[in-house]
Length: 325
Image (cartoon, rainbow, N blue to C red; front, side):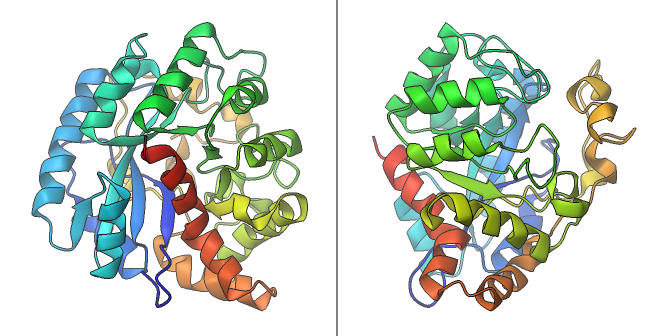
């Protein structure tokens, strides 16, 4: 927590989806000044059994690691910030683990999931991923949306196509987010958001989290100043309260193993700029870049209160609206 009591919030970063992975590495987020980070515990490509094993291991570890605590509530986040700790939450990248039952949103919420995508890059029975532009939000998807809003899970439209994302924003009663998505006008990858998606998210009082992943930044630069270019673009089109940070940093990326029978070219298509080893050849803006990001924003003329909003308070506001049911 910075001196004025504002929360620094990374809306999405990743660790290897292995129950054996040690979460002490997250101290890097804490040492970089973050009070909260949401980490991925599973994607549409992962078997639910693996996701449950990962959640069980990560919850147990968080209870034991000094200066890291789990973020069951916003009170946990505030307390962590006040005591120099890092609060950690979980997110799901896709709704396949729900097994077609919106009631399972509540189950995953009880396990610690506080943020959920509806699809990861490809279509599923809930919504359409970004690399299948015509796939719609389904009736089941609307039921999942209602379930998320009822139990306190933030609805995350990253990795969705425009059609599904706009439908979700139109139907939502609470703020929606793009936790880690950049701007398509500055990098034409379909993972990035259009001006229409930006406006729709802002209309829900949501937040777009700017990512430092090279695949999606201007000039494919994994640098703080490239992230600021995206922030500038967003702030020219919507109020600054709708802009945040979702680094999408991947710890120990070389350890991240895909499930058996997973075809990486399906989830991360070569024609959309991924390598033979999917995102392992990408470059990532690390959590340590947070200080430089703040400095870049101030040098561009952003006021301290605006920088605090971008670096965390805006996402904290969304969590206030969504987590507390």
